[in-house]
Length: 271
Image 1 (spheres, one colour):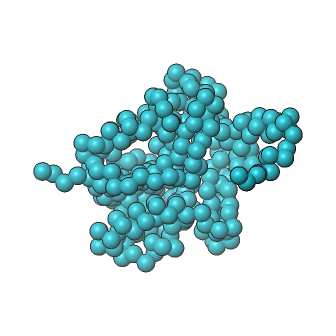
Image 2 (image 1 turned 45 degrees about the horizontal axis):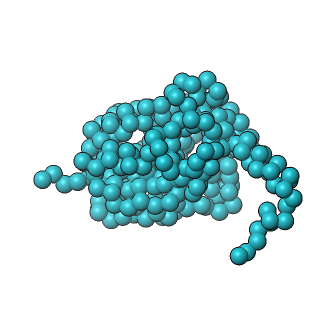
């Protein structure tokens, strides 16, 4: 059995590292969203928007390679299952993609994958976000492929997308199943989920996520879903094409673990 660096650290130092590592991450099992919100700083701060904007402008101008959660990287960290899913959809739609990226920031996933998508016959990447991000997106990032919208229904009526993507987004909504109900009723042909958090056992859990300050100083409520409940919500209308492990892998929650997953669904044909 191989040894890690931790095997050589004295017990007291190991315990200190463990405590420090748990200063950030996901905490608690809150009875309501409001209870978690009381302890959070929220996601809609101007400081977060400006940091994300500054980072993505560098990507847009070619001064940086990749951005995620405002952090710049020297190489793109692909979600290969997601990219494969996008190209699989395009192969069935005349080499075209027309999707809604719900909660897509200022275009992080668009810029992550554009190298592989720009050869398509058509690429329409529509982002639905909170007002401050949409206003910034329209001003600084919108182009012939990338558009920004305040509401899902308005985007759907204007752009007629057949696909919706939630990448690290649905778990940060107060009423996720209400939004998913709207998605289901609109009749998207394909549903993509990436970097979505689930709990290893028990019911849906509301936690408080504390973001490391080297990313930005923030905390906000976050759901961990019961996998069976989540899948069952779509089972009458959609078939599960594939399930895959996402970026974060296993996530410590104190009394148990969560995990980061992705799913691709396709609408069932009417009988």
